[in-house]
Image (cartoon, rainbow, N blue to C red; front, side, top):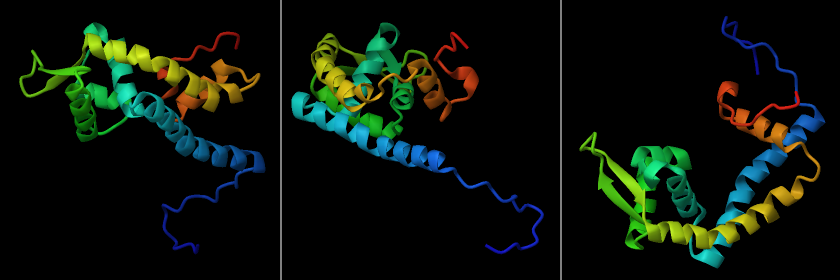
Amino acid sequence: MSDTGSSSATPPQRPLSPEEEAVVRALGRVIMVVPRAIDADLTREQRLTLNEYGALMHLSEAPHRLLRMSELAAACDVSLSGMTRIVTRLEADGLIERVQCAEDARGSNAVLTDAGLARLEQAYPTHLSSTRRHITDHLGELDLIRLADALWRFATPAEDSPATTAGD
């Protein structure tokens, strides 16, 4: 690339070391492969997608098993329209109910039903087994607290990290 003489030109970057390059490539593969593998396991064994499982899980952890649709979408890292489709499917199965927000008539909340909680509990062993097989069984003797903290920092400012730094 030629220098255009622009004052906003960035200084040359140091290339990645072979070790850094290996981490970046492996992480890219993990980001693509692992969710697909867990989704395939849940779909095959439970007829529930990973996104559906995630919605049920986040609702089960919320106060009163209730989240605003936009909050649920953010927690599951899907668009609001994508979450609407997920909730519509789960609602058809009686696992989630949609109720109007008391504080904002324009919004709606997703509420986990008792049947939804039971369905989540039924699917949990499959999710656990898949998560162990595709992730945790491969971590060996790594310091999991430090690994979780590093992974969290990829997309979150350090002050928001839930991992502790005990022992540092």
